[in-house]
Amino acid sequence: MSALSSHAQPEVAEHAFDPASRAAVYRAMELRRDMRHFAGGRVEPDVLVRLLRAAHWAPSVGFMQPWRWIRITQPELRQRLHALVQQERMRTAEALGERGAAFARLKVEGILEAAELWAVVLMPERERHVFGRRTLPEMDVASVACAIQNLWLAARAEGLGMGWVSIFDPQQVADWLGCPPGSRPLALLCLGPVHSFYDEPMLQRERWAKRLPLREVVFENRWGQPSALPLRDDAPAA
Image (cartoon, rainbow, N blue to C red):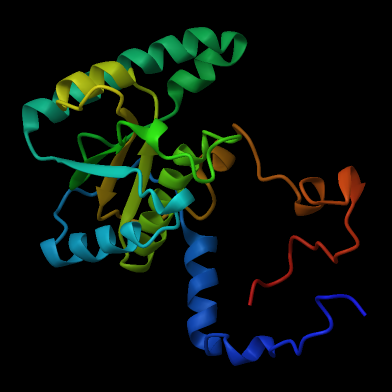
């Protein structure tokens, strides 16, 4: 008998959410969208605090909590950040070669239209945190991504759209935001009311890319070996 099977295993249902709550969690994941079209308006302070608290609940390697959040409220600074993103957008289009023209037609951000703009910055002095990062130092970035995803899901549950903008010069953003040496901006987050949510990911709707079938990204025991699980993409989540 294996060590795993030698102990009584708890029933899954003992710790599961009730069906309605469980379905709501899966629904937020399924309907979350990277939004680029916003309806202006505002986000109430108590809602912002709820969202930030949700982000701060995220897991992090070694419990280092490497995320730092900077709210952008100065219109002139927002304009400068928008111009910086547009510069990088053009450079990205050039780098894409034959797909550059198609990329240039895409709307890639809502910096000027969104009710809120936030910068997410990786904290400095990360080399002090070795726990969980000795062989995988990039786990600090992964931890920040977990916090952003928490915020994204909470925003969707609140009926708010959010878009992650990552096409910018991080050093220029760090300078403008007064970030300390060694820190690194990872995201500009557009957040706020939207007229409607996309019925599918925008880049899929625009035929830029499409979601891969689950069976193509799940293996068993070794790379490329198909999984024995019933990986149907049309199966309900809950």
